[in-house]
Image (cartoon, rainbow, N blue to C red; front, top):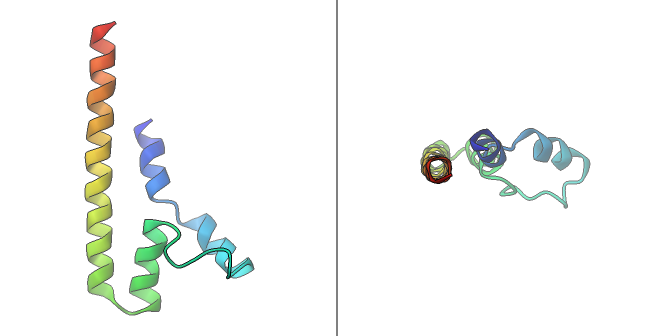
Amino acid sequence: MIFSIIGTFQLFNEPALLKGIAPTAISNGFTPNFYAYNLAFVNQDVNYAAAVAFLLGLVIAVISYLVQLRVNRGGTAN
């Protein structure tokens, strides 16, 4: 479950491929990773992209921790 949550936040390949096929369907901020990539390599704003990537890692860590707490509580209550 935790790997699915992390994978959801880190989705990059599919929007990047679809952006080339249908540029109007996928915006630059479609996923957090795609947004950070566009900031760094398209807009040349590396500092802001690093901050977005750091916050993404922090959000993933917090959500993973909360999911782990919930799973552990559910396992001991049964």
